[in-house]
Amino acid sequence: MSEAPPSSTVAPTAPATPATAARQHARVIAVTSGKGGVGKTFVSANLAAALTRRGYRVLVLDTDLGLANLDVVLNLYPKLTLHDVFTAKANLEDTLIEAPGGFTVVLAGSGMVEYSRLTPEVRGDLLQAIQTLAPRYDVILLDTGAGISDVVLFSISLATDVLVVATPEPTSLTDAYAAIKVLASQQGRQHIRLVVNQTARAGDGRAITGQLQQVLNRFVATGSGQPLRLIHMGDIPADPTVRDAVMRRQLLVQHMPGCPAALAIAQLASKIDAALLSPEAAN
Ligand SMILES: Nc1ncnc2c1ncn2[C@@H]1O[C@H](COP(=O)(O)OP(=O)(O)OP(=O)(O)O)[C@@H](O)[C@H]1O
Ligand SMILES: [Mg+2]
Image 1 (cartoon, rainbow, N blue to C red):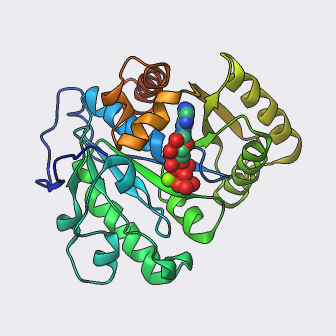
Image 2: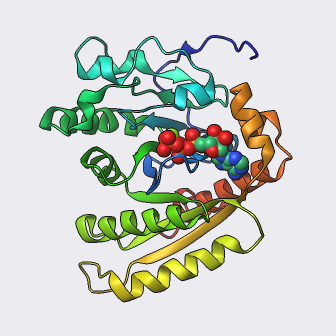
Image 3: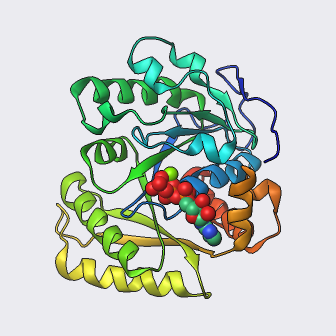
């Protein structure tokens, strides 16, 4: 395993770039999934790097409070994490880490089983962390845990937009459907964005989105009575270089920027930029 330079704490406020000067408050996007292990952390980290390259100030907040692994993917060795903030052992400022892709990361701290239960304190602490950090960034990506536990649903509730990651496997799609259904009924979500990861063929993601939409139309009603709209944001092909980058603990978009999965991430970033971030975005 190659040695990476140690992670460092960054100044809390990055300068605004021309692309972003208008934004006063970060757009908060939850990256989530029904089934675990489908690529949320891989997508969050590489999407963050791709959005940074487009001129945005990006923070990835690890809200997988029980089983975080963003530090592993990015080869970071955090001294202080959200856990230390929640237990009053550190200030939020001390947990900001500069990641290799030029964005900022706040890590949850691994294996804290006490957070598998959502207490009012955890709710308040997480909300406060996001409120404190939001004015300093253009985008905050929440790398959530998988599934529909209380902690996962609460962290998604703090986001304006939801990006569900699913793979074409039937188990992943069934779990994605279950998660989307809960988000429609409990959070009144009208739109959910979908990225299909580890696709085998071009067009797979669009077909899968269409199939899921049909089931949602039949069985899931939102508060407004309108069917929830699933928005296909792109496909990321199954690509052996992803595993290679993870093994080296490097960002794919830096390790192999021309490989098919890295190109797909760049395209996803462009679509998110146009749909949610640029001043012309219809939102
Ligand atoms: N497009 C891809 N092509 C090939 N392998 C992939 C791809 N995307 C993800 N993987 C593999 O899947 C593994 C799991 O990805 P990742 O850790 O991002 O999932 P996760 O959804 O965050 O998991 P968890 O639910 O445990 O947090 C990666 O380590 C990588 O090896
Ligand atoms: Mg993960």
